[in-house]
Image 1 (cartoon, rainbow, N blue to C red):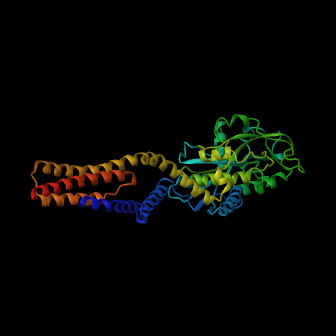
Image 2: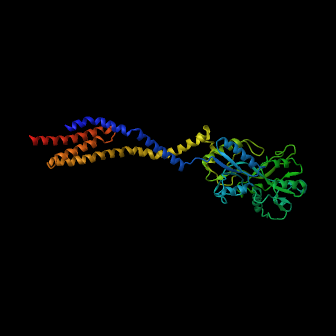
Image 3: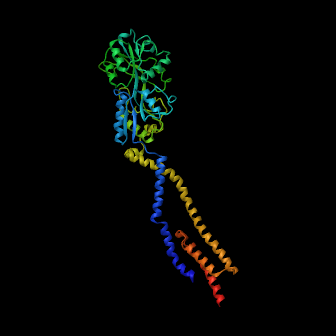
Length: 449
């Protein structure tokens, strides 16, 4: 009988179907699709950090330029190319960061010179060192020791170059004391000019906002005719100017030999802060802050050990990734792996977790979908078989055509691609088709007899 012969071939065909489903082409297609999905997700949702950044510093003789080159050296060891952009200082740096057409990624600025209200696209990463507002005066120019801005209003004073961080800060402080900076006795000399004129007696005082390690400050500390003013109203300004703080400097802290300062003094201080655009890549942010911890945590004359990098006294909204590194240190991957290796693993995790959240429920639902698809294939064949069987039962059929239809159903059943768990269903289907074939054959035999 035909159905018995075909049934004997059925296990071989089912084995072939299973092999086809696990063929190298099918596996390769699935793997390739998965790789493409991962690549697209990485490109569009978790982009790689840039391999080059630009840092705006300040003049080549300043602390910003020196520190910028230290960052350059440290970043390039981690595979990030760095370009140092020499600028006029804080104000220009802010304008460059705010300009979407500029290539600047990071910059140093003096806290207190601006705010997030003026530059909403700029964020603070960390404070890197104190930049006290030094009020340096000639001792001979004053009968009594000055200690407020009122003592300077009638004197010849250099208040910094227009557009500089020092000048911007002085203008904000003067405004609180209702002092106008356009008075004829206030001059816009740069720091070197100011010191020369002060030492020559051409002016009586100068404002300068730099770190105590700056070369010009060493000249000031060692000059016995120059004094640092103690700001008696110092505590009144920080609550009104974001980014300012008060430093208490003990006698002889700045220069022991020259007894500078000659008494304990109060000073207003801004903080040199490292700022960036808000779209700076999180991996670059974390790396820069991590490097800052290694570079800046040592004690200095005006700051304690580990006081910097600091999250305090900053002018702009703080970056969350930077604050996390400052609180907790670098993440696990970045602590133990090279930067780019950690970046790639981190990116894969960021893609894999959301994909897993999508794919795991899908994989749980997939067997039901596949099972429905298989049942649908069986149902279609059974539907045709039922129609043929009705014709046979009614005796209204053409035997040759019925045999051709049954053979077609057998061939299609043998080619069904199902898992080994559906083997019994295939056998049952073949048996049912064979049963109809047998009945047709018996009907033919009865007619012959």
